[in-house]
Image (cartoon, rainbow, N blue to C red):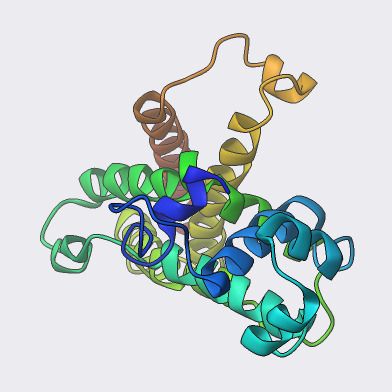
Length: 228
């Protein structure tokens, strides 16, 4: 079992403080989250999950009914961890949008990296190879971020901003955070090595924030010219 998932499970894992083994259900969920993130729903077999969790198929079915039920639980766990956000963001509308954007980006990168990097992988897997009929609970965990980012973009672009532009700018920030979180987990990949040097999360957040602000400022200037 890995420490990374255990720290994110529940309130830092039910038995992390005592050092005792996780309950069977949590071991299965831990293994499933990691394997589904690595290979997707179709590329993961129950026997692999059982082997990693140290439990038989009957035990998995007892707790989760089926592979589909287990995937749903893994996706819900990803969504729960993604939605674990500082409540202070909701009360910061009086702060200028330029100052609101950086903390939002930093928070999103934090929730998609290190011990929660498996969530970024799962989000990517669901885009490439979505399980048939499964609800995307993981992506739903980004709903609050999307709403807050849209509010920032709307304030930056002004009241006459096109609603599609607001959504696209917000989605671009989320997409870049997911991409760089994935890249950080694959330092040997050619795309990652093109960056030459690795950025700390704080520097990366500042870079992504500045890039988003420049893009919005350019669009705002174009709107002014077109309306003049």
